[in-house]
Figure 1 (cartoon, rainbow, N blue to C red):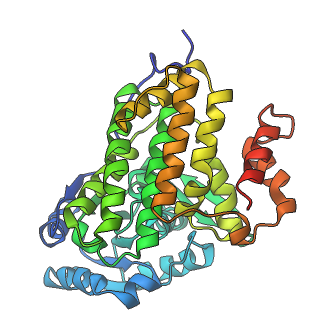
Figure 2 (cartoon, rainbow, N blue to C red; figure 1 turned 90 degrees about the horizontal axis):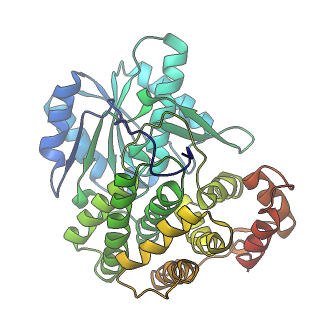
Length: 382
């Protein structure tokens, strides 16, 4: 039996994660519980500049930590794509505060930065890894993986991977997302959509139960992203979106690492190099990549993708290829309705770089999909 079939494989849950707490207002009780569960005493609060300066969320988290005599310091110099210089500064702040846990508040960049800090601290001093409690305020779902993604001095995306880097606790409190800018909130929702499709439905070795969780994630993202745009203060819709983000990237420990889906790979090649937010890269690439899968996907990939149309409550066209094309059209319509339509030219990507981006995404110009990926990038250029 083929090892790439979803009919054979394995599943393991990442035992680093000790708890996920969710619900509006849950921060007040969940954070003290996680401090006790982990047996940690002093926290470094890690976040980005915008969240620190433009909301009261960090003050709320600091206040809870101070009530339990667990506050060490706050570091808020984490930017988009987690630059290595900022990670090193954060590691120094962690040591200066004599912290033993990082409480991260924000989106994928600070959550990944915290993983990277834990990685570098472990390299430096050995012993057990420092732990992270993640309090996400976007829908990027970085909190459910144990890959630390950051950007080196040359602007390349670097990954450090270890199960010990996964956050030990996660708090999904929708009230804390109300200050998240609309474009960031909605675009990271499309990132979660991308996770469900590109990292699960057509990624090898992902077990069927997780693929079915992704169908549920797609249904809720498709329903509640427009509702959240229509009423940004609808906390119930925001909470459902946070849970959908969780389902889109359910914690998973594969025995053998398998490559990300093409949409995600293109996002990694575009994001850090050209300063395009990860959510926007998914808005750019997901719909055309799904359309391409109707032509180049395996029979099993096509079946999983085609079935997604049912969960969006859309009628079948009568063929797998037709259903995949219809799914692609629905994804693009959702992007457009959310006001997230973008082009590569908007982000000043040189048109001459397109062959290089395509080659890096598929590893070689000799790859049979290389011409199609070049055409895909040309189509989203302007």
